[in-house]
Image (cartoon, rainbow, N blue to C red; front, side):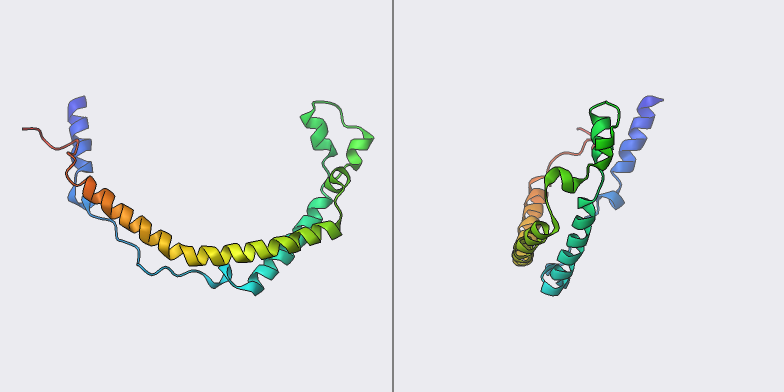
Length: 143
């Protein structure tokens, strides 16, 4: 019974429908304008700034006590990310502002490199397909 089940599974996987090639993606890659749009990146920086300010006020003392497997003290209840790291809004905003330039240039570099990367991956896929075209399939009968 088991050999019949194995043969049925192998014949199902060797069907022509499964052997059909997957459709190739178009050669031209469209990059969303948000990746390179400076206004969108500025908006993203503003959102990150608001989230970071909220993160500074996140209480962490009770989590720290739980990690250290000890009872929570009054001092633990007053600990926040701000009090532990010593970071304030001004330094946080300056770090975010410095990071905006790096994010913007990184997005532009990615937009320039993506078509080349996609073309190289398509060529590699073609080469792999040619190299494996004559590899015997496990379900193919031996002579």
